Image (tube, rainbow, N blue to C red; front, side, top):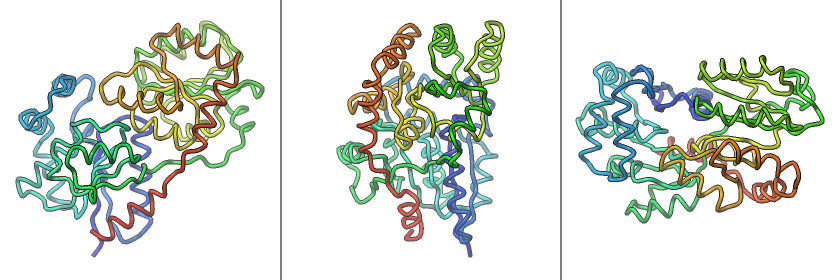
Length: 354
């Protein structure tokens, strides 16, 4: 009988969703696992507009973490439809890529609805208490680096439960740079700035940078935000701007990342994991929560990134990169020293043994 693997996430973020699909493919290719994906967003309308998720945001913005809040969050996320999916699939192992998903699995285990091993994949680079408030129900933690492992140990989690693995990454398909440049009508002589955003508020950053007409190519990836794409496309068309392309959720993104020179992004754990795996210097936009703040601090402390706090400062930073190339090269040299871990072997060995 095949071992049943359920992979859970709560996201419409490109890097997060891609990572989950890479993980699912890894197990599916082994032919000895039955794999199922669950995105909690499929059971709610939208994490940004749904009132219940707004309540979650307020709970998370308060730094006090306790079991009462955990029960409140679990009650918001739980539904009979979701419960039925767990009961019918009856997973042997759950791999969770979100602390929200951890809570649901912990609740179902506690209620004897399922009996499963729970593996929590932490994408962040500083471990917030929201990841560990239900630590007694988590069998293993997979983390990005030794720094996160040490922080978990300080929270009295057994070191044998913590494995430094990194996360699964979708790597590029070795497409030549000149082919991509021609495909998207870019200038082969100019550096490529890859700009990730799923937030309408980032339009002002995009607009300010584009208006400067620097000698750069800008590839703006707005993921699934149709309103943001519409505004950016209109701005480019009305101002007859060249060397700027706006993309949504496309497979070429990681090929573009491979040939890009600098990445502009928020500080979500999954975005930063891709930036580190591809070893790309980056400019980080203002953090939106305590998780991103911790991630951003890690990147800046290690000289992998710089941060900006306004559209104006973004334009100034890009100008300084163009005027002083050693600033980018310094980050690149630091990034090249990072050793990528063999995540596939680590996770397959862990699942086989459990």
